[in-house]
Length: 620
Image: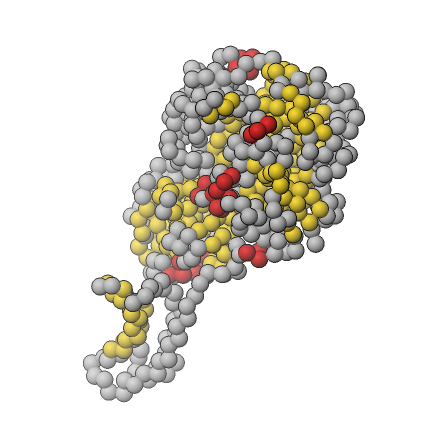
């Protein structure tokens, strides 16, 4: 006889399970199935006789349980591996090209003899905990979200053996408002790298969203078998935030003087430093935009505490901004293009002689006097490319001179879709996943070094409508002399500090964070890094959830945890602040490093061209 389980939804009937039960088999066949149902669907438990129905009484007491994804629910690829597409949320697919060119995915066919899935390219294979790309076909193990929520995506992609020329491994998300995959994580796994690259990424998923774990060959797919057994865990709930762990926040947000009425249109964190006399200084605002008759500009502030500085003056720049060829004293970017555009102050340092060092974020696509460019062509838009520059002042910020470009990403600041200047040569591939350069940073000083924590955003696809996608946090540092003068900057790479900050190699501290701001918390005895998840913020303003990580050495950081449950700002709609929060931890003391904190501290926050507010936070 035959036993089967079917589900009828509308006019369509799907076979979920079917087994032949032999005569006298009193042990039977077990099953553990998951299926998405809606009101009116019919699940049938069917028994069909063999040639006769003699002695066909069958013991069968099925149990149905409604299952919803909850914090802690976990899907491990190897455990969920089966001979059926979609079972346990897992699927197996082959692309119609490499990772850089793929535009569609097709389901693979199960190879029962070898317990694996295969594509039309016979070398495109997926096993229980490994994948092998085709010669010209990327392969993907996919996971379809059963419910809405925050997921943690963890695992390690590593080469299974030696030989070959390595692979590209990536995690992408496809959702209804962005059918062109958002890249959550991407790494090159070198030939013979059996240790591999690990990931610990957070993403917000809605029911039906698809995560793909993609492996694509290099120039050949010889010896490209890759071990990868990812885990997807629902991790977000109201009580999984730091508030759930005992942190408390003020029931309201507080205005600062740093508002539009005082010419501050902030678009980043707070750039603050204290001079040797104990005065706290800040440079705020930006120069990139003008809305109607409103001109965005810089302003210098001074005071005793971070929450109550007073306006001093609008500084003078002794160098031009704007068009390539004249901007920034005609000094080219370290990776080749002519510099152009505007500045966003994000870090301030003052040495013992009273010299001010203003570290600023710069982009190629805004305020470039008609010479701006993005990943796809000329114009003022996103996604564009970032660099970090330095200006100095010897008169307390009244006027500034351009010094140099101090931080440049490893990858070129243009794509092959548009080369902005003659003679630059090959840029990044003009297809998907452009890295948008080093920027969106903050400074943190110890007694010996000045640290710069910075982000590199990814574009989910190279098109004029694309927005910057997910990203990662990196770090560079410069030694401080006895006079507290910053020295030469170097990047953190593979456990050391030997790479040049300009175009040198860089190792991410962690994925899924952006706009990092660091504080040493004496009450906890740890460093705290506040970021927001850029890939989530790009999906929805309501998902721009500030998060915090912890460290004891400024390099090794814990997984990020949401600071506060939604809504982040008590009594304030998140949409009022644009797509993301630039969060800066600070104290309100009249002495010392303004970014060092204790049991109680403030969190400044700003959106895109907004004023600055803060909330009070107290640790348990």
